[in-house]
Length: 265
Ligand SMILES: Nc1ncnc2c1ncn2[C@@H]1O[C@H](COP(=O)(O)OP(=O)(O)OP(=O)(O)O)[C@@H](O)[C@H]1O
Ligand SMILES: [Mg+2]
Image 1: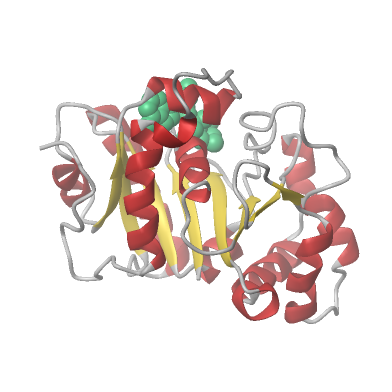
Image 2 (image 1 turned 180 degrees about the vertical axis):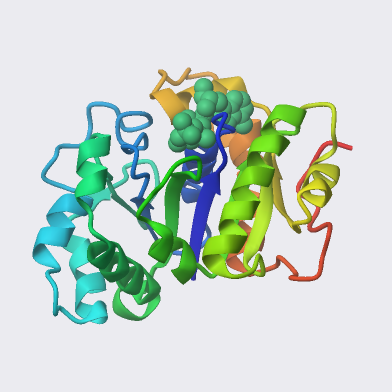
């Protein structure tokens, strides 16, 4: 199963949410930072812990044109970082800047999308991708097209919903329909999560709470307090439920509301 997290502009928390889902996913996982604008996953949560030897660029050099998708997926194993925080999670770092992101041609994105689609068969892992924001021209559409589910991150605010509406227009245009797209509502605000999803005419894929402490650890590598372990934070506790439901494929295509994940009411 391949799950892709994306967003409109206004930084609703796509990267932070991707990490919280990664750390709670119920099956072995490969997490891939595919933000063409430059990946935030490594310099954020894993600040100082990832070298440039690992990542999308080194994988693409090894999994050259003509390498079958199954073999290309197997090659992920040689380019990932294993997480000490959680067994069973591999992380493939992304680009260090936009220039690197632009160096990926359509053909390489297609190759990556095919490999991600074969992850389960090749390495027995689900795939989880941070695709970054859909605000500008970008090359990673093949990865979004290959996804079994696309989560559109959005805050329960008018500003963020406007940005997400723009993103749904782009998603519909590029994917042909929104059948695999659902809303991931992040944090607290004046509107309940179900209402936000409904304003976007998307099913609610999940809701994650406002949790500044855990978010700072996941987005910026802030130091963890001994008295507040990350795994007991409200964010990760909610993420356990959301991950489980996503991994079970519980987003119903016709649902306007979905799963009780402690969303605001
Ligand atoms: N659940 C949350 N509770 C509180 N703060 C959060 C939460 N999720 C994210 N944040 C905060 O929101 C800010 C933006 O988060 P993040 O970088 O994950 O957004 P993004 O959507 O990936 O942005 P970009 O489009 O720039 O990649 C960060 O300061 C992060 O700590
Ligand atoms: Mg991000």
